[in-house]
Structures are given as C-alpha cells and as structure tokens.
Amino acid sequence: MLTCLILIPIFGSVHIALIASRKGFDLYIRQIGIFWSLTTFIYSTIIWLYFDTNESGMQYLEYWPSISALGDLTIGIDGISLIFILLTTFLIPVALLSTWNSNDHKIKNHLINILILESILIAVFSSLNILAFYVFFEAGLIPLYLLIGNHGTNPNRIKASLLLFLYTLGGSLFMLLSIIKLIELYGTSDYVTMKYSTKLAIDQQTWIWLGIFISLAIKAPLFPVHIWLKTVHSESPLSGSIVLAGLILKLSVFGYIRLLLGILPEASLYFSPLVLTLAIITIIHGSIITLRQVDTKAFIATSSVAHMGVIVLGLGSSSVHGLEGAILLSVAHGFSSPALFILMGGVLYDRYHSRYIRFYKGLGSIMPSFKGMFFLASCASMSVPLSLNWLSELLCLTGGLEISLFSGVLASSSVLLGAIYTIWLYMIITGGGLSPYLALVPDLSFREKIMLTFLITPILFFGIVSNPLLNLLYMPLSEYVL
Image (tube, rainbow, N blue to C red):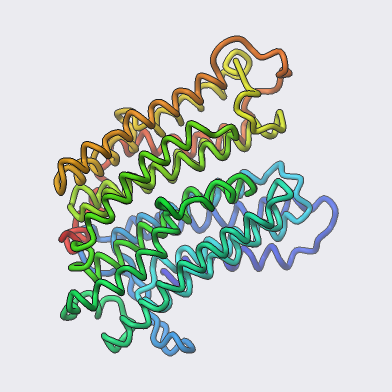
C-alpha cells in the first residue's frame, strides 16, 4: 500500500506531462492535478483507517531488494510517519488549488513539480533505510528549486532558489558524512536494526549527532542559520510558500526524532542544553524580527522561525509531553501558516499587487469574509485556547519546564510575543477606516473560502478532539523518550 501511495502522485505527474500543450488546456491540466492529489489524500486516509494504534513497531512493511547502491530498501510507517504523511497529502491539494487562477504560462511544469515533490516527501517519511532517507531528503530540493526559480513572483526568484539550494545542500553534507559513519559502525543502513542494536559509545555519538543536527538546524531553521527563509518565502509562488511552510520545514522535526533520538539517544541527552538554548534564542529573535517586517509574506515567514523554535524546544526536552507537542505543533503550524500565506500572499496580493503592510488599512469594512478568516487564522497562529496550536504549544512548553524551569519560563515568552505581532498585523490590515488608496475589491471567492475552510477546520476540530492524533503518537513515542 505504501508503494502505491508513493507512486500515485508520480502517475499524476506523468498524466499531466502526456497532455498536449494546447491553448485552453490549462483548466483541464489543473483539474487532473487536483484529481490525483485528492486520490492520494483519500488513499492515505484509508491507510489511517486500517492502522493499528496499539502497535509500537513499523506497519505496512514492504521490501524493495537491491536498488542500486542503496542496498535492500525497506519502507514502513509508525504513528509518527503516518501523521506527517497525512499532513503532506492534505496540503498538496491546497497548494494545487492555490494555482487555479495563476497566469503562469508554465503551469504544466508547475503542477508536475508539486506532485513529484509530494511523492518524495511520502518516501522520506516512510523510508527505513537511512541512506535512502538522505537521498529522498535531498531529492526534494530539486522540484522545490525549480518551483521557486521558474515560477516565483519576483525577479529575485533565481537568487532565492540558489539560496535555498546552497544553504540546505551545504548543511546536508554534514548529515551525509554522519550517515556514512553510522553505516560503517553498524554494518547496515537499516534504521530498525540500528535503533534496536547496542548503542554506540558516547564519544562516537557526539560527532555524528553534531553532523546531523547542523543539517536539521538549517532546515528548521534555527538561529543563526535562518536567514535564507525570509528571502525564499518572499520570492516563492503561493504554492511554494504553502509547501515550504507546511511541509519542508517539518522534515527537520521528523529527522530529529528518527535519527537523533532513535539512533543517538545518549548524545541527544548530552546536547539537550544546546538544543534548548538555540530554541529559546530562535523564539525570541524570530518574534522580534517579525515585528520589524514591512512585507506581508516576510512577516509570516519570520513568524514561522519563532514557531519552529517552540517545536524544537519540545524536541529538545525529549519528554513525552514535549515530543507530543512538537509533532502536534508541526501539524498545527502546517495548517495555520499556509492559511496566512493564502490570505496575505494570495488574496491581498491578487487584488492590490502589493505586499507592503502599511499600504493596507480598514479592509474589514469591505471584506467581511476575509476579516473572519483572517481572525480565525490569527487566533490559531497565536495559540488561542481550543485551537490545536494552543494544545500543542502548551505541551511543548510543559516539556521545556520538565527539563529546565528557567528554559521553560524564557520560552513561555512566545505566548506574549506571538500575540503582540499577530494582533498588530491583524489590526493594521483590518482595523480603522478604509484607506483612501485602496479601491473596492471583491471579497473572498468560493475557491479561496474552500482553501481556507479546508485549513482552519482541522485546527479547531483537533484542538477540541485531539485523541485521533494522540492515539497515533502514544505507542511510538514511548520508544523515543529518554
């Protein structure tokens, strides 16, 4: 079943590629892309329905023998993998729907890149061969690079795509060296074998841990290697921002749990103060630089840095509450951040062709539906109670308090700082009288309402009824708690 799940988006991209490029075929191509992405999502929910939440080991195991230099490739999932796969298949239809009214003359390539990226992400989350994990981890850069470089909105898109590629690839070279060393020491690249084998000596673990962590810190991103994110988001097409904020940043969370906590637990415990320190600095620094932004997309991008700091705080605590909170906040941020990008980089930019924050004022008086959706997305972003963001951030902060009272108190500043910059943005754009420089424009279209409802509804639902997600996490996370 996992093989089929990985291949369905590939079939969709091939289907689109075979369609002749004729005038008037853009709508048909978009419909085909939505069809295959929804098929993938429905198939992933079927896998969820048949998943045994009482089992801590890997399920849906499949073997692909002797695939080139990777050796025997095994794929399988546990509850952690399944949550990230569901998030992937959930967000890709939204990303494709965001291109519906795009004037991009290369829409076929645009859709193909997104579908191929979906297959690669599913392969990352299901791979049980750490060398294959690395290959898929890096392969996602190729369609993302093409997506930003070919379909970005500004002339600086080439610079942004190169910045993304060089930063993440440069950091991942350290991960590659660490993975090669792990394979040399264990004599296998199978993740399950490494996880349940005798652990390496602490002096061996530390250098390997640092190599992997550097790569994951850049991907997260953490202070001080976060400067690429603002530029990349600012130059990306809307679909690229949705995928980047909702999925690509979450690869660091998955990699931390799988590689660092799973294979190098003693080193993870040893470096826990370092991780907590970087997380706290990232939270405070990310919140402060968010308040200094004048571009709407840059504002949402830098706020993501602060949110990822809270997630890493939960990971660094290595406690049940912290790890549950980190994964749930990854999911919550995967809903709320794309919603804000749609509102700021989609709705407003499509109507006024400006991302300058101070250009807007009083939009609530002419766009009530926009104001309502913006209010709900803002509440989720600043973790208002009854939202999934609130529950997950509470768990992350609880995990930080369990390991260090001082760290937990400092990290709790995220609650205040997040409220300050989120309320400020909301009031600037929707509050007061309508600016005389703004023309009357249509409110949210039916398509935009569908996308935003699709993102905001699970935030509210899982914020109140969180057991479906927590049941997936309880058994597998019991093996990662240090």
